[in-house]
Amino acid sequence: MFEPVLTSFVREPNSFTLDVSLTHGAYEGLRKAVTLQPGQVIDLVKASGLRGRGGAGFPTGMKWGFVPKDSPKPKYVCCNADESEPGTFKDHVLMERNPHLVIEGVAIACYAIGAKVGYIYIRGEFHHVSQVLEAAIAEARARGFLGRNIFGSGFDCDIHVHRGAGAYEAGEESALLESLEGKRAQPRLRPPFPAVVGLYGCPTVINNVETLANVPLILTKGSEWFTSLGPEKNSGPKLFCVSGHVNTPGVYEATMHTTLRQLIYDYAGGMRGGRALKAVIPGGSSTPVLLPDAIDAPASFDGVVKAGSMLGSAAMIVMDDTTCMVWAAENLIHFYRHESCGKCTPCREGADWMLKILHKIERGEGEMRDLDLLESVARNINGKTLCPFGEAEVAPVLSTLAHFRHEYEAHIREGRCPLPAPWRCGGGH
Amino acid sequence: MTFHPKMPYDTGLHQSARQLPEAGEPFAFTPENLARLEDIARRYPPERRRSALLPALYLVQRQQGYVSARAMAHVAEVVGVTPAEVEDVVSYYTMFYAQRVGTYVLQVCRTLSCALNGAERITDVLSRKLGIKPGETDPTGTFTLMEVECLGACDRAPVVVVNDQWHECLKPEDAERLVDDLRTKGLDALSGCHLCVEKR
Image (cartoon, rainbow over all chains, first blue to last red; front, side, top):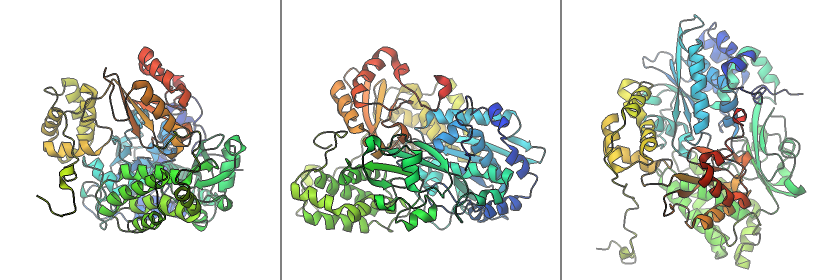
């Protein structure tokens, strides 16, 4: 039976304070890290098989290894706490209830790559969370876990919170750097990759909050413990967010052996009102929807890919049989049109066109040829943008068209939305 | 002048969508806010002062409620960039307001998880109750209604943020009462984030 480790004490009162965190072994990972060579820390993370929890699942140790060791420039660690992918709310829990684990992870990453400064880039809407983090950093600094000569090792490290101001695109790593430099959050052309030319033109590692929170555990419990959890190449504890039409939506910690079905029916208490499951988005709005017949797949990076989607940020949005899938696609494309940073034409203009077509169909004014047009617009965005936003915004359209084409056709045939659920606004929006 | 015979250039299609910021009252940071800004600027390398631009704009908004054109000019001077660069940033980020807003800015999350739980109806109820459409401020300057995208609290849907504070699991049938409660109790009417268990 798996015992939570990332969220083991988040329900305790004052879990965010240093005193409570210390009774649960806070900063023991950092204490051990500074007795090792930086290269040994990177090797340990490589051996653990830790993969990035932000969405792409890229091996963390390998990312750290790309930072040039001989660069004369300062190096930086950026913790990506922008958490804006629709359906995702896991980093929120970690930062608010276990901030010292995140701070410790950032400090260890700094030590491993030779950085003296780390920035936690947090989304602007998490105002109260940023205050918790600031207070936790001040506590850690006051007790010598941050600052100069940490644990007498000669390692200096400081961490700062940088608050964004409402931009989904700031969660994309190069756009995050732009935003941190005081500009619009728009992506950069790669190569060069941030590991070589990142923040202020210096080598930079950017990791998700949950990724960094795993690092202290790897130091204290070992890489073998880490790989023993979960399927091969999908190791370690994982936070899953379940929202939508389920009885008990929330953040659940489990291994990646867990299936999507278990997450919906066991962890999240099953479908609300006992209704039938219609579709599930397994990894945040940027991942293709899955049908009920695919939910026996393990919720692992590789398992969900095999099932025809992606684990992404492990944010499941569950929809019951009252949900109109054209409406759902329109809702998400509204999000993408609003959040497109505007730098690449296919993404900026394409999102607008997709929304117009979807809105027309949802209102009951669509024509059959609109379906081909919609698909053609989507295919002309896919792979033609600087960052993965393009692929993300076509996922809801292409996957609903593939699985629910009959619903699109019903809208057009009947000249109305055949499924105007009572929880929606009458007459469309 | 037309560039294409079939393009109706007289209908405003050729006009820029740029919304000019309000000029506003003369603006300068209070000594306390200026000191705060200098504190924040020390987090970044001295030659990278521009990184303090977003924090500076938050301070402006805290001081005068929105970011006026005059405030942008002041920030440009203090941070060491051009006023155009400041406006570029203000116009990009949704949390900076270049126009005056109400005392309470009601921000209803409209993205999928909240929408599946009735967010559309909440906006509708609030809109009728306040007599304004999303994006507008009521004539008394008390409430601004906005629809915003995913706020990262999908397990407590639907979520509404008022200014900087959260209200979770708002039901459409309770939305009218929230407005009344805000009028009488202010921000204490809000539930806050369920994770802040110590505050209850």
